[in-house]
Length: 322
Image 1 (cartoon, rainbow, N blue to C red):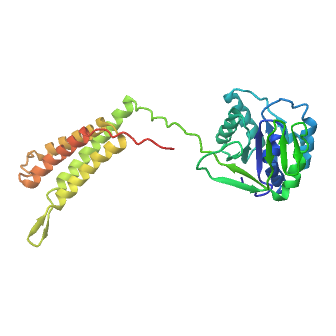
Image 2 (image 1 turned 180 degrees about the horizontal axis):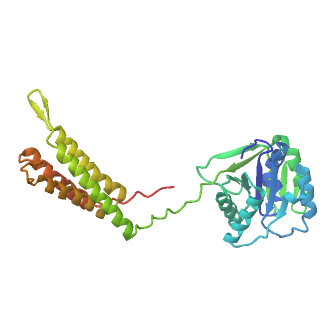
Image 3 (image 1 turned 90 degrees about the horizontal axis):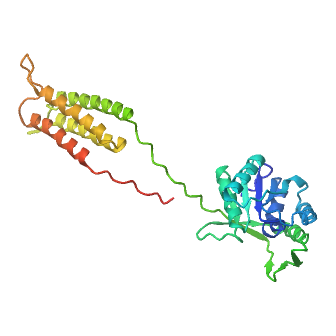
């Protein structure tokens, strides 16, 4: 909850009239003092008409002159309908934050979900929602305490205000302090939907492209694999090493990125077939893959790499803890 002034449009969602003063009255008054727009929504119509005068008195005591900003929702018990109703209200008010102190778990969860649907941060009163490990945000309302107590006094049919003690009708007591605390609930867990399976046409196109890529790497490797560098008395087969690295990178990369053995197989076929064709003696008698250690390794190694990459089992993705 950002006390940044008139740019804030904060929507409070509570069960019934009176709860706004008891649980969030100081925060409402402070936001109004800071020039924010405050909307209060009640999720029940119980005793709404009887509380009309009390709501008016509490609203004006806290500093809200606009009666239209405080209203009762249709109060559907269905979570989906409540979520949709609250979502429409948030969109209508162009809310920048949502605060809820609803004790009804359906209404509270609907408020959280509706805020998430609208991309709005939500704060839940710590008096009605205890989240272990969640960061608590305390709002200093000591300057607004007298107005909060005055608003509480408007609901004489619900409780008796004795100094800073609110004596409830059921015999319980609530101590009114100079701060109100809220928690940010954890965002709802979203189910990651698996990617759509590629169509036959997509797989065939990918296989053709992989076939061509394999053939291209085979041509480049065949031309370069005989290149060596003399380092003193040691002959380093630089060309063969680079050619094998390139061929292996292509096959492994396709398997990791595409996750389709058909595509890797197509690349391997293109590569091995091209190496085989280029190793044959041409009509002029020239040979691109001469007999010897380098030629033998270049002919055999890509086949071994391809076999391992294609046969390697698929590693299941880690489950997200979010």
